Amino acid sequence: MDNFEEILDTGSEDELQELKSWLFRENIRLATARKDLEQMQEQFMKEKVQFQDEMKLLNHKLSNERKRLKDDNQFFEKKMAILRDGFQQLDIDRRRLEKDRARLYAEKELIEERVSYETRLDVSVFFQGVTNPLALKKRYKDLIKIFHPDNLAGDKDIIQQINREYDHLKREYESFKQA
Image (tube, rainbow, N blue to C red; front, side, top):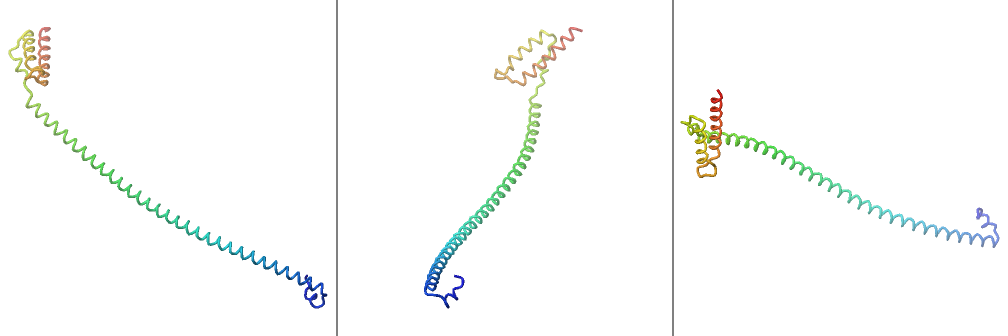
């Protein structure tokens, strides 16, 4: 049907009828193609709108996640700053406590020295007049009975001082005896 102008001018009734049916079929084919194209265009527009909606939703979610991440980072930085400050304060407190502890131990030692100096007895007084090992042993037993920690007048420190003095005097008598 390439030369339909010629058929229109010189064509027979059958050829015109055939041209007419061809044009009808072609018109129907074009109408169908147009409808298909319009449907495809409508489908494309629906998909475009749906895609745009999805993009908006995803962009909204992404912006929310970025905001949340930014807030989380700020919160984390604040926590870290608080922790750093806390550790610095703990370090300062620890140093202060060590200084206070050292000062208290020094004061305690001074007090103990004063107390021990004030309470220290000259236990050699207890052994005055002892001239031999037998008298030393008897005096030692008497002092232990008096100053034993289980007695009311007992004192552990005095007993220790008495023991030292007894051992010292006992060694002196033994070395004197050997000489």
